[in-house]
Image 1 (cartoon, one colour):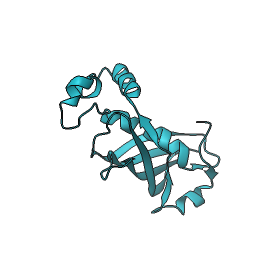
Image 2: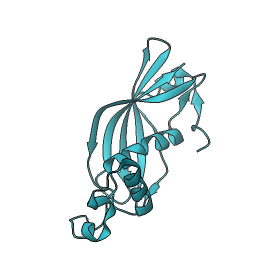
Image 3: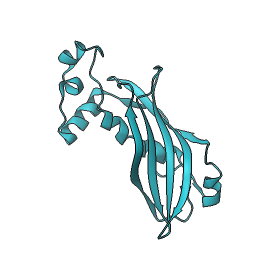
Length: 155
């Protein structure tokens, strides 16, 4: 991705508190991505990487690691969440709540839906943003995950 969707003044971002700020594009989670994540994290549980054994589970196929799906939040947010004009950089700051709700099956597509919950000034010229994020699975009733996600911007 080249850059964030747009930069806005802090007051304009604060005006979005309580509102949905964006929905990312769909991202396909295929077996190649699942295998690469398994290799990077050394989490090779059969449900992720063994197609034959996974086919015998209630899912009928391999599923993405929950942390793989979670790791895509930054990419999704970078696509749709505005940044504060004049900021130096931003970082992930953590989460208050995280739930993995439904498995993401091999080949499924996911996208993130971001609502700005809170924007707070912090000491040292920092701004803490809290987002409610739902990662949806295309064609499924239940989302992959729901998180209250924190980001810190350095001014």
